[in-house]
Length: 430
Image (cartoon, rainbow, N blue to C red):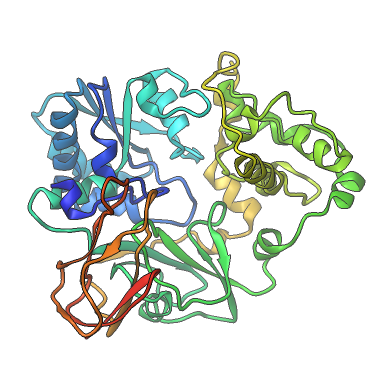
């Protein structure tokens, strides 16, 4: 049913959920409701307003995998979500809440698995290697809907930043980001845009791009804001060589390094500047989770260690290098003291004025046209099963999984006429 509903991980890279839950008897199934990034409000509101579906999805995955324990992890400041989940779990056994401090990146599944299970996922590994399956709470909501034959056709998205009415909206997949911004009243000034959160999201100039199954937010950030500059500017070896003093604060604050995974961005900076390899192998590069703490918080010179790690990781992959499944040392005994409070990060990013409520609007946006990508997930692109000119209803299958491939089915998110079919997307018009 999950496969037929086209459910993929809603909070990360979009791994097809039907493949993830085909796991051999994990001890834990963890529902990730920590919502890593500042300013985003999707998962906390999904837990508050759709607690029944989140719990039902978790129970279904536990039953399918024969897991012994279910845990819903969320931050202590999500008061409404905690109350709703406690009501839903009242009198039930086998599922518990794990209330977390509000630190960044609490939603990183490595941090989550260690905090709940006391185990470190090795470099190149997955949580199943240490007896856990981790799934985003919004994904579990879609699992529950899939069990009722409701495909994944809509996505909750936070529209925030410099907009008149910050909101979390329900948008058909394929809806243009410009439609979402209009639904939030438009921008208060000239802006650049970040798809996702302020740290791990990407800067875009064109907002006529579609909502996909993994979209969590769009943030309007005023032009000239330092956050846009640091996310968009280039990083040269000459600047690193001139400015980086090798203080190693980036490495000291790295959450993955603190787990014993040898992520050392200060050595990556020196390697790039001097043209020599000081990293003791590729594993530390592969273990980087791209959280950006080294760039957005640790570095006092405005350098970009996370960008350097990203470039090194891409180069290793192009060269066909794969990581060894390995944990180098025990977690740092000072790990608790190294966890970065979200409030401090928000202040450093200069986005405190945008840290406001973005109330959920259950009435879905109804666009006249959607452009639905054929690849919104890890694996092979979906294959169209309809042609231009055909009529579809919302929920109809429009693209299937290629034979023998890892992938996800795609369904029409609005009813109308298929206006265009390409190798990359399908356009439907009412």
